[in-house]
Image (cartoon, rainbow, N blue to C red; front, side):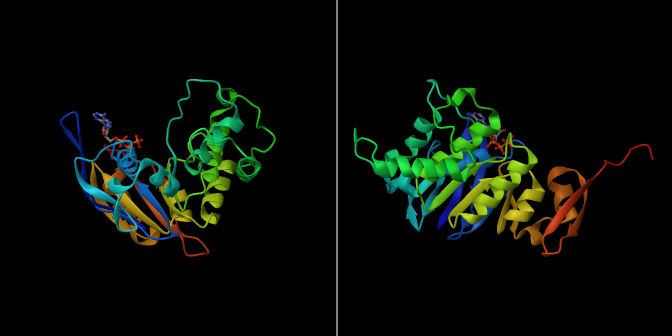
Length: 257
Ligand SMILES: Nc1ncnc2c1ncn2[C@@H]1O[C@H](COP(=O)(O)OP(=O)(O)OP(=O)(O)O)[C@@H](O)[C@H]1O
């Protein structure tokens, strides 16, 4: 459903992405992994149209995203980006209600159905009853959940998430990942935590220095050799009772021994 074809990005004269081809099947949860600065956010930004690629294309259901109007792509893709900058003190309700705008005409007023969808989205992320709180006064984790609620209120078939577990404690990390899995949507997300990626993703794509350096199911991709090559960290990989890999990191070798 979402595909990138030879996607390249050059910024400030530097090649940030080099002919990346990834694909996310309908209703799959696909993780994008890779070290800091490897290009994960840049790739997601091309998909949610904040960045214009220098080469290649993003295809939605086989159609070039460039032929979509902004409204059409907002009806297809909802985004939870890494940083949330709001210059005004919006309430939680107002922020989540913004998710409804691709479904409305200019100046159309919010109706009872919009209100219901907003309440339901806040309930889903565990933020019910906080509609009137000022967004900027929420903790980082609470803000993250409100932004996810806004994406849910957008009612799109696809979700793009850049580090959705950022700022969250372990309980909320697991809750958000369980929620993402339960949504029955096509999901592409950037993740740092390889154990979360292993536990919740159907497929993974790995970036390193702007290049695609691996892809496969978590079990296929996350081997000790791969982790050492890409992250320069030694690791032991076990398998849980459901056959999914889990990773234990090991201290770096001491050079003097
Ligand atoms: N506007 C820009 N001009 C120049 N370089 C940029 C620009 N935006 C991003 N970069 C560089 O592109 C590279 C990839 O950045 P990106 O944010 O996509 O990485 P990432 O994998 O998401 O990293 P992280 O895990 O740290 O969030 C980095 O080296 C970054 O410094």
